[in-house]
Length: 397
Image (cartoon, rainbow, N blue to C red; front, side, top):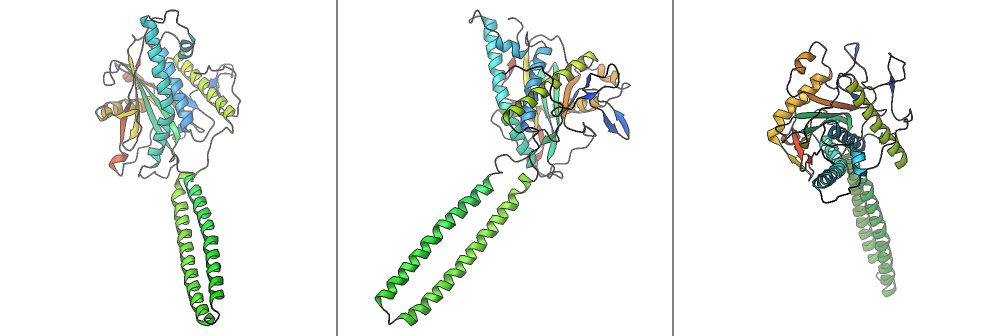
């Protein structure tokens, strides 16, 4: 896992809103939003990036970073995940070294799965047959559950991604490739046919000149028939190409909105987003809204909310947890915009829901209050899925 640099990010990559109190140099992590004409500030930490749509790469990177913070702040690992990975074991056979190796291995596997997971989720959401199926973005939720089992969680941390890009991955280049192959194939066949016809005509003319009148008429009729068939075939091919282009249009209806043009710029953007997430969590902790908790080492499970059509070999549908996790998600949404008068009721809960939002330009807006569309098909129903592994915490090192 690459170390994170703590240099300041370029202003063009991350929007840093300045606070109106203090010295004016502190970034405002909880981006304000307008509701009913009034400007309000979410009670939960919000990371606002200077992009219109969040790609699967950004969502996966920040999910990995948040998981590392949660493991350390929940006392599941003795050191931050980056420092833990750098440590060398003097005794490779002791129990703590084995626990450390198992956790780092599981964390590395989950990190690699996150990339393909959000790509598969983006495709599943793009194929949903709902009233907003034409939208280029959606909201997705991931939960980090700490406890002996997903159903008996001692802590739940919700990771909400607003303005998440939805697109069908793997289909953008297929129409152009197929059209090129068809064009090349048709271009190769036509000259061969014409050369064969010319050779046949020359051979027939050399064999007999007496039958030229009848043969010419017959050959003209045959050529007319062949031309008409070729024209009909070309028109069918053109119609097929047009239909393929029409079918491919929805998946390419919007351009790529990545704020970077090279791999180096992408890494700088992701590192700057990591630092902004860390600042948001630190600011929330200073305001009494942090996720730090001195818990005993336990198991950590990862859950994601996705439609039934979602397909990934590392994720298992957990229908039995859907009601429980939907209730936790409702508490998370209510807590985002809860007023100070109603916070006392949530504070009395034995298992408060914690979390963080990641969004793009404009902040959350009314994202937490807009109702979800009713699924038109059963495979579009949203359920919770669990990662097929787990992370076991430890304290000794």
